[in-house]
Image (cartoon, rainbow, N blue to C red; front, side, top):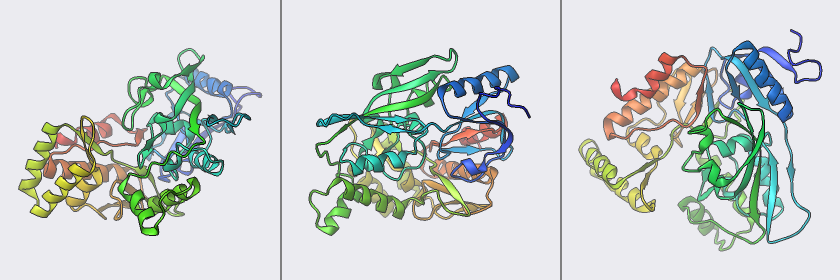
Amino acid sequence: MPNPAGAEGPHIREFEPLKPYTTFKMGGPARFFIEAGSADELCQGLGLARKRALPHFVLGGGSNVLISDRGFDGVVLHPIFRGVSLPSVNTPETHLNVLAGEIWDDVVKFTAERGLWGIENLSHIPGQAGAALVQNIGAYGQQVGDVLESTSVLEIATGTQQVLSPADCEFGYRRSIFNTTARGQYIILGIRLKLSRTPRRVLDYPDVRAYFDERGIKDPPLTKIRQAIISIRDRKFPFPREEKGGNAGSFFKNLTISEREYEALHEKVSRNFSPRVLERLTEIRNRFPAASQIKIPAAFLIDICGLKGYRIGAAQVNESQPLVLVNRGGGTAADVLALALHVRRTVWARTGAALAIEPELVGFSEQELKAIHNFKEN
């Protein structure tokens, strides 16, 4: 078809398969697919959606999304504007400017090679820089929201660009306004990070501490920390780069619960599991202290319910890290959704814990979404 945005506008493709753009390597076609190289091209894509009375969806690195086998009957905007820049002044603290389409792990590698501290523990997390902010990615004691100075966004309703502060973003565990109160209101264009040239090692997480203790390294340099994080993640998380299959990273969120909720969990585990499992729960409760809430790894709950390796079609609960659901090759989104529903129902029935799903579900029917969200009723 002719380019609806005009000769000078972005290239628009019809019925573009979305499978190659997702790390799950599944998903049907987009009615319209736009690779946007600028904020202006994003605006033109939004204009096409309004003109055709179609929904739109911003698809970044495709690492935190599950797209329906039917695809998305709307306009998919795929930002491809990339770039990383540093000020020329060499000061103890420096600001790193990153465009939203930049690959996140490339950004972390860039900072590690230049001695900039603050995001090294976020190594080897797939996706784009803009998406990193949406879910406030975190790992091994660091969160991207902790080092954000500001973010530039495009307000969808008005087409104007704004700059938001960390307070504006309302960061929490795996959350921000971009996936909660202001979902669908903004498109992230770029982020500005405040990093340090002075070492700020965050090595308290058990796996990280064990890695360096085993090697007798007391004060590891920045590049060694990045290397350690990559090694740990590769051992526990299948990085979504397999030729035949893939995954979307962590499919379930860890729990943060109150003391009262923990007591209910403790009581149900004591009834349904062995004394050793109950001991493990107590150990976890003491190992992950929090200021006001208790952190319970979802992987622990999935594991004790015997779900490691459980499979529906070509979708499987990862055997080494059950937070991850994997596509073993040729899998469908329907397989993954059915598996996620089974995991949630099983964990709920045996522990009373309600696991929350991390990836965004795109293109599914209201009936499909109702089934996955109302899993307690079945």
